[in-house]
Length: 390
Ligand code: GLA
Image (cartoon, rainbow, N blue to C red; front, side, top):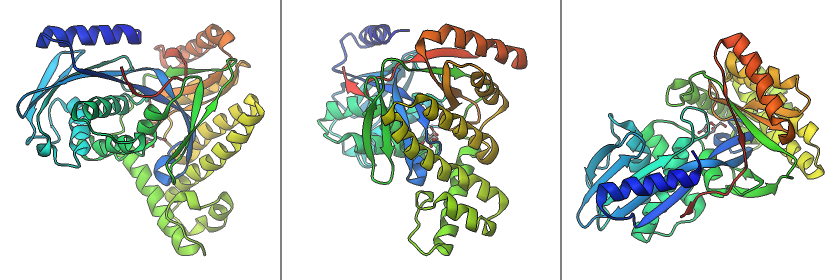
């Protein structure tokens, strides 16, 4: 569904339910992660982009302390008051919104002067690793900020969404998804530095596009695999802080040469986990100078290296994602490919020549089907503008 159609459907449903148009509508896109995997919570670097699909949030204030929130696709409504904003065990989709509302008011939504009624609808495929949940948090943050006259900068809103994930949704994510949704720019990549929370955009020429290939492997970051990877990285950083004669707070501070020299003091598994974000940081920095030179082939090679590191060290790939990347490698019009986001299922991100999109999609679909019996979902992605009020 096109964004305009999603907007029209949402506003139509809101009007039907409440007999009036929403006072505010905000939009926030999903994101693709292009290079730099599991580096955000290690205070490292990432190349990402906001995508041309997203979520709209429509809202109006209420005159009392009541709030209600409707999921516009299956028209399920959650009701609560300003003093009962807590993580829900049922209809857990509401946690992304209520968590964001909670932290917009610094954990004290009861201090808000009135409630709100809201409805959301989007077109990001769920479970694809395109950050539909961050998109929902960011459009909520913008719409509710507008309703209450709250002025906060983009990074602060991104952190509010991240806190909602940690405390209401139960996912200990970094800041990548929310920041990409806020800072995206049409035709550009976002280069993030998560130590200083700086976000630059890097324009891409018209001769490249991204293709997302969604495997049918389950992708859920709320279960333990993501958290255990993050824990291993934190354990490794503590170890390096003890053996290196320099300040180390995160794996960002550790070089590949240091890992090679000192890995012997780590357990085999922790060492394997740690080398992935360390290598990814190096790849993003190298990738930045390759993009400046316009060397897409070399940039793409780094994407393949990134996937290999996921596959063999971080172990956040799976057979389905490997099939997609292996198929991509054999197609000359694909510059590079890798898993995108948390991993353990979800999607691969391919850097491609858009003129060959049909051929690439057909070839990958054929190989995936031969191995796994079903077909992946393929879509061309246009890097797009970040979250905004409509
Ligand atoms: C998920 C998380 C992000 C980031 C990526 C991996 O998308 O939400 O914070 O850690 O995985 O790079």
